[in-house]
Length: 74
Image (cartoon, rainbow, N blue to C red; front, side, top):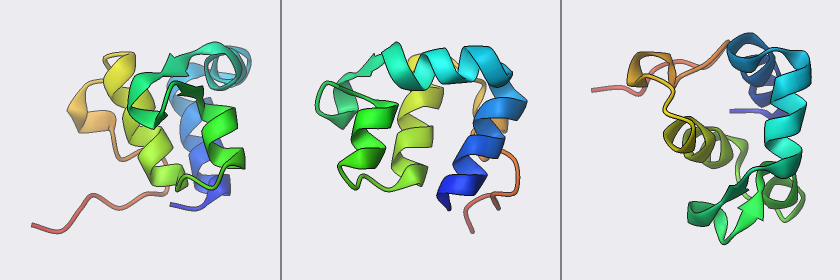
C-alpha cells in the first residue's frame, strides 16, 4: 500500500476531516503507542498503519483492504 492509497482509503472510510483527526490523535498500541502520522513518519509501512487503524476502530474486515488496495492472495 502506498501512502497515497492509505490517504484515499482513510478519506473513503472515515471522511476527510475525521480521517485527519484519527491519523493525528488516535494512539495505536500495535504501532508502539504512536499515532498513525507518527508511525508513517517513522517509516512504518502504510499498510501496517492502515490495518492497525482498522482493527482499533472496529472497521469490518470486509473493508480492511481499502480503496485501491487488493485483498491478500489466498
